[in-house]
Length: 534
Image 1 (cartoon, helix red, strand yellow):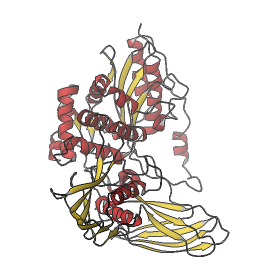
Image 2 (spheres, one colour; image 1 turned 90 degrees about the horizontal axis):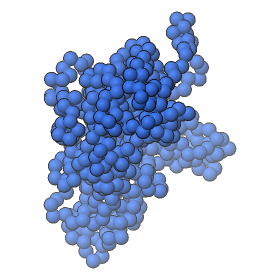
Image 3 (cartoon, helix red, strand yellow; image 1 turned 135 degrees about the vertical axis):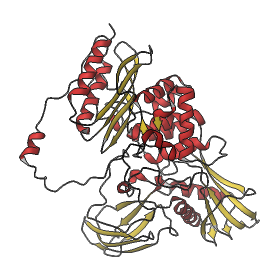
Image 4 (cartoon, rainbow, N blue to C red; image 1 turned 180 degrees about the vertical axis):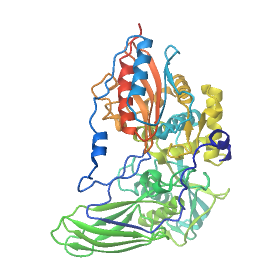
């Protein structure tokens, strides 16, 4: 995106994104794949069996210090002094950008580096939510459609191709539907069968042309691309573009059952040789995925073991989803003679069945409360695509629309934000604290304000803030979006002061001392909640 150069030409170049060809990956585990961090742009972590030995110097540097306590300032000057002390006293390196404004009275209560462009991490999702709400409306729904190209004979034979057309629905998974990972696809296949389709003489075609072909946004680091929080982007997606290799023990000592979930046999060739060991509760599973995407599973699993499931990122969501659709059709008794392919939907194609998404306000709540990058990337491109679906959803168009939205409606300068993606995972993203405040102030007064507020986690109570600021005046009061990477800690949202004023705030820290930065933010939050005007 060349347009970023004028503002960020002096920034160091990020590490290059990896090729979309998956590397050969081997996983060996006794207890299933190690869980990854939430979708905050962090790296997966494994527990050490023994503690790392530290030097005396590092132990001294890590010596405990007094906790940074929140205050109850009386008067604007006291609040400014307290926040200034907190910002200056704790972190040992890095840079802060902070702004606090009363949206009730319209005055600025605290400002520090408010016009400095900074990496926002997942607080970028607030811009995505606002743009999507403004362009589409909180009740907007996406629709994954099945269409036929050809005639449907009285005996149920489709003389032609069956097309599954993606609409960029981030919730096309079992998150909102009971059942396994293939639950929504099985439901869509059932609706096709109920429409009278019994046999397809042609191919099953996937249409992902609603979005651009680029699956990895600019500025995503290569080291993150095999982690679940960096799932690929496509208008035709399933299961948040993650698949599972599941191993189920046999009842005795026979071969274990190994399956790809959701099923997509044409997209992921599977070779399995896993034996069941009678009486054991353990497992030793070895998985290998080659550059062509084929998966080989070997090892053993105990007959008394729970099923073991191993997560992989789907490298080509469109072809995987199309293959999953063909498998679901066959599971519902619909015969398919042809192959799995990709292509646009012909203008004359007739609709057979559809599966609508949850309303946008529910999808945005998942995005913000759980910080799911997959939801953010699809919603950003859907906002760019617009309610008429008459243009291709691209990150560049999303950024262009976002700049216009901020300038014309929120009153923020266009150069105060640069968005390479919609999630904040890109190292190219930049936001000034003032631009964030402008966005929050506009969102607070917008027609979709209630949906925007409801999408945010609440301090001490829910989602990514449930363990933060507990037993302080911020608990149950402050609601805000978190942002976390290896070099960013951020928080942006709203809190009600003790005298009833609603404050909008943006806290952004860029640097390596993020644990102290997090403690600082968790002291500033309840300090704002305890603020009283004199």
